[in-house]
Length: 291
Ligand SMILES: Nc1nc2c(ncn2[C@@H]2O[C@H](COP(=O)(O)OP(=O)(O)OP(=O)(O)O)[C@@H](O)[C@H]2O)c(=O)[nH]1
Ligand SMILES: [Mg+2]
Image 1 (spheres, protein in one colour):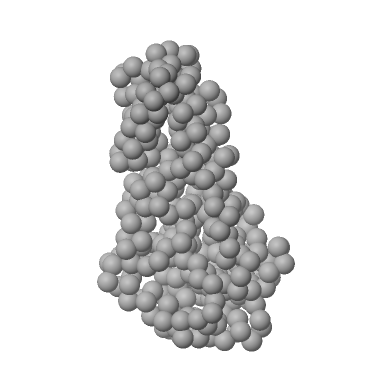
Image 2: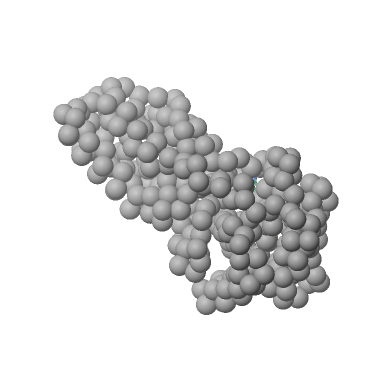
């Protein structure tokens, strides 16, 4: 998963030497090249150097342990992150074009259906040609109902219909697919605001989850998208897709550290089963696997 990152990390920690300025510079470069981002990299390096000083150690072997512990702590998964899976929840899935929203929804439907939940999908991306059919196909593949209207209809009206069905069928999870075209913040807030008002009105007692989908191969672009969505609505988690491809993986550290939004799932392929809950320990261990 964190291939690129782990490769340079393993070079750096190859032998046990004195951790001098040059070593820290190399560590800094390695993290920035791995999409950790400048701010997060600086924060991590400062914290690690400070802790090494405090412990009175300065060998790279010691630094490795301090760094690893710091990353475990930074990425620690809270049990409450998956509370929505145990409640009657309305899950909105948002993100820009092509990041993998619809595919991730299909995977979530598959996952929750298999764990015995009653799932309904709402095709509220009524804008892109073919978007409704794509979600309907996922519904058929996973045996989950998809509530949809025709292309061009009001997304909020689709959500309204889906909520009626959700209540009538006493379902557990409603997952809403949304359009990725919303490139300006005002537009985005309006559209999501309208959907949220419908949910408030029709099913205020529902547990709310808002997942932003980010394509891990887009590095710092993904960071700025997350930032915009965070300003526009109450984001509760991230789905990081395409972690099977050329993604450098460091973006997970950046979103967690800079935006305080937990990565809850990672996408590792295009199949229904290619979605995994984010495992912080596995993620950090993968970075250090060859050291
Ligand atoms: N390799 C890989 N491909 C993925 C993953 N997730 C999604 N994809 C692919 O990315 C492409 C876009 O996925 P969609 O689910 O259509 O993305 P979207 O965000 O719904 O796109 P729009 O509806 O156009 O905004 C598809 O070809 C998916 O198969 C993943 O985790 N790994
Ligand atoms: Mg889509």
